[in-house]
Amino acid sequence: MKPTAIDLFCGAGGLSLGLQSAGFNVVGAFDAWEPAVRSYRQNFRHHPCFKEDVAALTSERLGRLGLPKEVDLVAGGPPCQGFSIQRIGADEDVRNDLVLEFVRLAAAMRAKVFLMENVTGLLGARGRVVLNRFEELAQTLGYEVRTKVLNAADFGLPQLRKRVFVVGIRHDVSGDFVFPEPCVLRHQTVAEALAGLPPPAKERCTMPADPLHIVTPLSPLNRLRIEAVPPGGGFEDLPLELRSNCHKAGAERIGHRAVYGRLHPDKPAGTITAMFDSFTRGRFGHPFEHRNLTLREGARLQGFPDDYAFVGSKREMTKQIGNAIPPPLAKAVGTSLRQTLLEDASLFDEDTALPLLREA
Image (cartoon, rainbow, N blue to C red; front, side, top):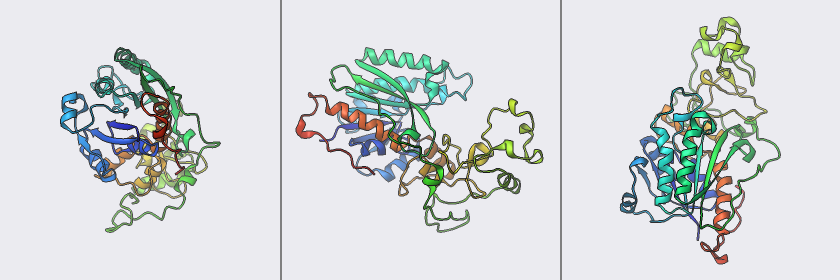
């Protein structure tokens, strides 16, 4: 008997994939964005994914959808732009309310534990206001809350991606929860992660072997720029005549220093974003070749297997990949949560304990 989970704000399914690998039975998922729902359904055929506004969900609506009245885990990553450190004047962003809707739904589904992932801005000045309200509501609804920042690179991902994980344990659950400790002796590098991929197809290829492994052509000017940037470098390596006007000021006056950058082959990538398909938007140039990353390469850096499918336009798929919760990190936290549930004598007896996970 596996503990059950529902994935709210599921996106393309990175969290669900990690939870399944950790031994959970994901029984349903929700997202309001059609392209993400289509991708999710393409990869998970044995449970439903609903295109629904999570803020409008009620216990009655969940019942009509045929979902269990109670689940062991409610998990998800509510949209984070409302308190991103890159966003100005976002204190009243309606997306902040989705964080509170998350804990409301966890209680409505009688979840024994919940897991929420978000950007580190949640711990900043704007985000802390929302997080305090979240913790107060969770405690009122009967949950003990624990929070920790985890770096995906510490759990086998070739990417320095720090995210906040907020875990709630219902007061009547006796199992003890401990956040996972780093499980690698050294960080995986970009070169190791991309090894073995075939050469990418050209954009005009009508029948590519992998529709996600296609090169986006560069403009003549951007071709000159990427040729001038060494592995691990950025716009500061460009000669003055190749810099855009906004980058000709002194370096101390420029905020986004990773733009027009290349990945370093012998280090993990920086955070993969929803715009990783262009080196003009960050350090997303291929470490060796004079080109942008392909979507498949971005998916590898996010920890997705090569047979994972994404659906939509190039822009939509890039956003799905960049916004995903990396499956290896989700697996690590999910394994700790599963152990908490298995330690609770009122939930599972010894005969139902799950075997140790096989390493992928």
